[in-house]
Image (cartoon, rainbow, N blue to C red):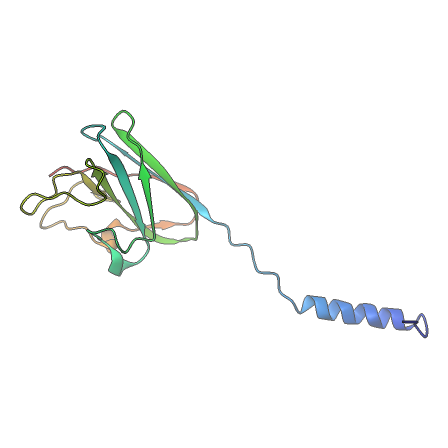
Length: 153
């Protein structure tokens, strides 16, 4: 294609700028990391299941079916930790299980769990202090580290 004059070059440049500026580049949404630690495990048998939730109707999740992300941590000297990566900002809650028999389920006696459990923001649980997303949730707006207490009933 042969240009008729040098005067048309600015016009073509202007059109290119208009065309290219109409396409938006998606804004970079940084993901955050959440490190979850647990200590005070009564033994080094099995593993620790860490389940992360971001919806109130999914928590607590006794059968580990409604989680956002689930990770498994090894036990070393009565402690375990995992890091959830690339999470968008938001409200989250964590549920843990000391899965001593490695079956992925909470082993129960008549009613109460026989394996250790834990929830973010909880030091103990009882009939009057049941886990809820509202109580267990926390805001994630930057990289964060939390400690979850293990509870043996």
